Length: 487
Ligand code: C2O
Ligand code: CU
Image (cartoon, rainbow, N blue to C red; front, side):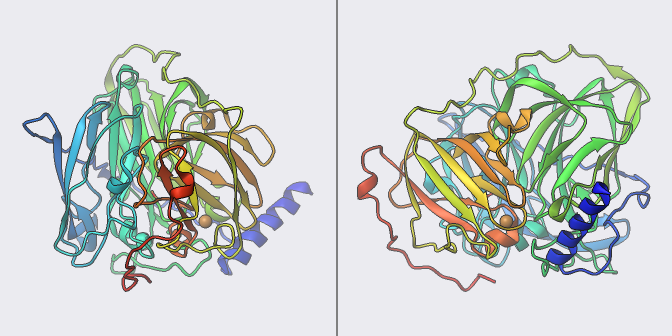
């Protein structure tokens, strides 16, 4: 009885919100042959400059990609036709980039999860006009993490990411190097994205539903129908939900468990053993999976309750070779960075996410400063969701989840994160450690990472300023805003 009641409520929610009439779960289970070898994004080699800086060139441009054998799909990519290469550096490295825009229209490239001077963030204020090159540079100064990059053009992020602009940015440190780290061998990126395709194999754009685009086909690293042969008995997978709106509840079809070793903004202090992990758009997790010779299993996303969690998808078939290289079991101590503590006098801010997809009654305005934060401080942010499902991401910060809907967060959510799922109708409380870069001119963003919501204005801006100078910060920026690219 209870089950039926909940199911009915769930269905009511899905169809009420998505405005769709069918009552079948969206799924690809049973439809795949797992015939395409999983593509592994190329590891981008830096050029070493005279002062030791690692210099990378990322060129965004159009191309065609063969997702389906014999069909050329028009896509966008970075240094290639779809997605980008993987950038990998170590804590302490100085990095610089040439970000070349060959798209034929304005875009940006944002470093999601990175602590850096606000001017280098690549958010809506660092537009790169068609044909131009943007040259950000900074020193990597944060614990090891799986971060990523994607455009952040105000009003048009959803389409730019959907067409293929995204890539992984890995930061190593002494803690992370103790984990399996051989890229493409026992350290494997998995960028998971849902797509809609037209009958002739082109990317289809339909974001009429309240969450925006929810696809019925899955690409992993831009591979449709993928399989992967592993050759090690322990493999670290870096899961990135690079989708516009869909959440994935990852697990394996043979019921095997795995160890979660890291989430968005860093490694956990200790591994957590699970058989499911849910990631909403923009979130990452690092998991370590054990294999026996000859194992075969499928990484699947299991259907959740409603909304962005609904749908069941096979993602990747994994086949273990007949002989596997053996490595030491992973240590019980991972990150040496202590958990983010709640300071006694922590400033508390409240954020209301409403049915109208705004935050505290306001839609994003590039000229308006919504919050002024003292750089290097730690605050409590309480996010209240009065609408359907959302999530919440903060630039230039790492946070720990303190409370979800009045209860304890899941164990793996207590590590360092930068994006968190906000369930329907729930409040989430986080303790946020802000980077200590300051800038009175260039704001940073907090927003829902469901890209239709973000584009629709569910985003606010904050300045990080020298502690004690909060009062001097402008609440309006003296800038010209060109809105012609906004949809
Ligand atoms: Cu992944 Cu503000 O972005
Ligand atoms: Cu949202």
